[in-house]
Image 1 (cartoon, rainbow, N blue to C red):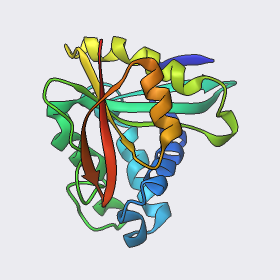
Image 2: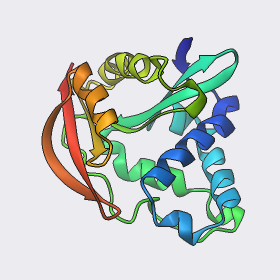
Image 3: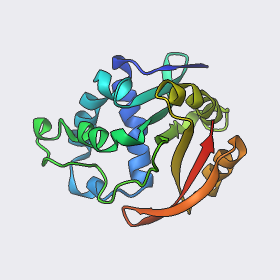
Image 4: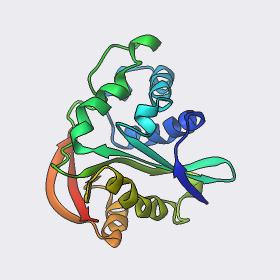
Length: 189
């Protein structure tokens, strides 16, 4: 397994995994748009350097040339810009312009690097990929002068919460994203 910065050519595989998270979160946008158009628009966004390296960072776990998992996040102050970036290409593929994928935005805290999405492809689960991606994040966050990493985990996903707590994350508050309750966890690095 190789853990590395995402490259432009990874965009389509990244979007396939990112789409799994949107489905799990039951994001209302999925019912309002054509799935193929949404994937095209997101793929264009993930091809940008802004989405992979500057405004946000996308880290991938690669196994035998395949993107097996992703970690996507950004410094908290980039939240609105990243939301806008993810929706930038909606009109280009025939989707209605939006400011955010989510109806209710995440609730990252000041001075943290926010892990927006962590997902492992179903066929690669149980192989330590999520843990490997999480262990790379402190290095990423420190390059952004952030010394805390935050994330939101759904109340109905105790398996993910267990993984995060095993790495050292602790609960700091609760929040609601798209009508689901989440625990906001944070770890100092």
